[in-house]
Image 1: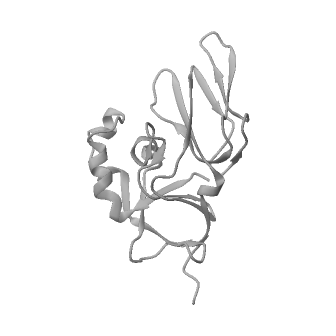
Image 2: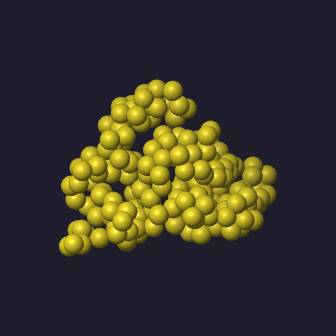
Image 3: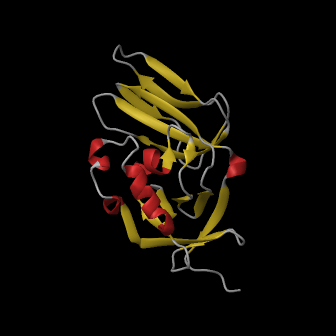
Length: 185
């Protein structure tokens, strides 16, 4: 299942201002943030109960296009989340608070093959990517930390593939159960 990313609706203006000064692919930087946000798809988080559900609530999370998470929501320079972030993985939602420290693992080559997916636990030294070079040699990119992968994807499509994996210390992630509606009190 393809992951879905969500940010707090109340943080959209802050993300709009980030778009003007961070390095993003040209087609993203010249666009309006509204092109990447689906305000109709909302997610409410109940951190006390450890639940997430689609409904209206006081401060909902709204869906943001998954491909703009690195750079816009994940600050690739500071290696932190720029705002609260929720990643939906089927019946589970991973929640990260703003400012959460991240490990960024990059790989680029003629062909890049990710060996992990979102939600996977990652150990230090674990293989993250295989890279096929222009000389058809196979290289391995390994993790320098342990944690949970919250993003794995191609960053900027070009002649050389460039992938990024974002790994977070497991103690910094809140794992929530995805429900169709909130549980009665």
